[in-house]
Amino acid sequence: MRSIIKYLNESVKRNNIKSPEDLLRLMKSIQYDNTTSDEDYRIKTPNQVLSTKKAICYDQVELEREYFNVMGLPFKTFFAYGGTTHTFLIFKRNNSFHWFENSFESYRGLIGPFKSYKQTINYIRKVFKKEGWKRWHVNEYKLFNYKNMTIDQFARKAIKNKSYVK
Figure 1 (tube, one colour):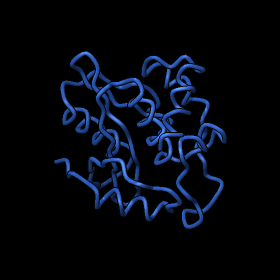
Figure 2 (spheres, rainbow, N blue to C red):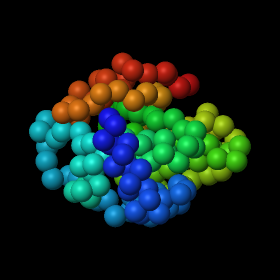
Figure 3 (spheres, one colour):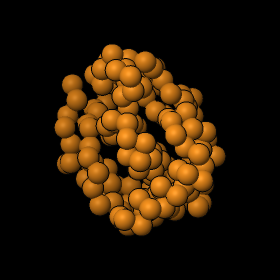
């Protein structure tokens, strides 16, 4: 863990990342990784994402988590499921909330401002409904050891390690 933080601190300095806007510019260089099957895919570390420039949403949110920790902005990570899955991050800045999205390309960007986490999630619910998600749940999940996990293992852990958001 210490080496990841050291690497990210160096990366923040090297890439001049001082804000969510700076991070979004960096994240845009990361392509969605659809080169392997769900069964074979292993969740990547932030170092692996930065070196390969390929990641699924799970990987990307974990990289974003590390950068937001370094930037010192309050944030929460969320896991959405119901037919398909998606992870995303919401951060707070200047008393407003924003959806930070990179992997869902149709909505890539800093979306907001909103008045609360709940209002932001309600907006995201509308987006997902528009995209065809009929029924889905969203959980806040905390950092856990995802080293070498498959997509399915990560999903089960995120669901188990949750606070259900209504």
